[in-house]
Length: 114
Image (cartoon, rainbow, N blue to C red):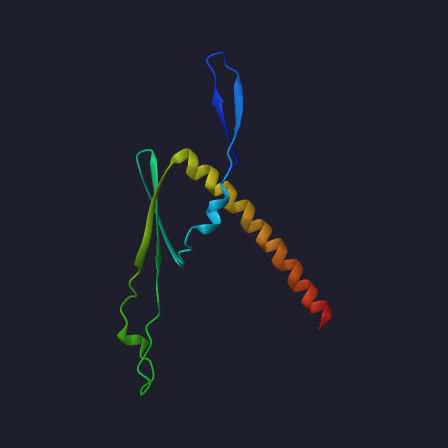
């Protein structure tokens, strides 16, 4: 999602560079470990949330049979266009591939030392 393009009446496609400001580093980071994605019409909705496992009392063992479900605490809901969602999906895929390759390299370095 680095660049956008615009079609002129002449049929010419003009690339427009999209630049993120330095202030993005000042935004608060919100942790999430759950994601719900839905869509309605031309928009996608991404709801990020947190599930925290319950902590049993110190005086007894946890009984998982007592738990029916863990509730997600939603932290943010974002709506995006279908076009933006497709671009984000591609960006996420690329970044996950880079992460996996970097992790594979780090793991192979660690195993070659030991």
